[in-house]
Amino acid sequence: MQNHEYLKNLAYQLRCRRMPESLVAQTLREVHTESEAAQSTPMELFGPEKDYAETFTKGKATSKGFWIISGSAAIAAALILGRVVASIVSASESHPLFSILNLVGALAIVCVGSVIGALVNHRLPEGVI
Image (cartoon, rainbow, N blue to C red):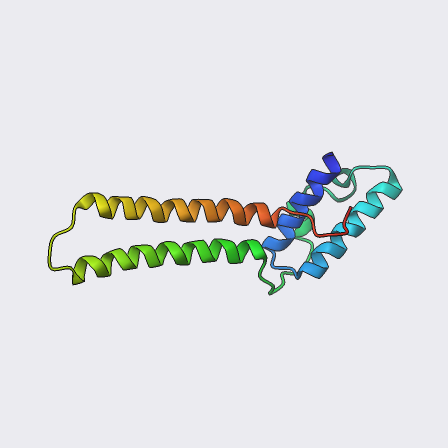
């Protein structure tokens, strides 16, 4: 189980370095294979996930988690912009509670999107274990 968590955290760190998904999967398979062959933990062989990930050159790929987080931020921005435009266009005054609820809703969307995006970036690619 400890190795599984290491691999998930390493996957996250590699995706944060914008490595292509194929290289993330290949690296995780190699780490898993080498640690099994050495009968050791990945932490003992490669060190902390973040430090090991930093030994790789940064890539230009964007992960699914990044797109989820970006999409949720765009939806939240559209909600807020829509509320601002509606307030400007509307001839009558609106209740401040509607604006507060709009902001809270936008914040909730960003928070949920961030959590889902992080979870997606922590997943293991198929065929790693």
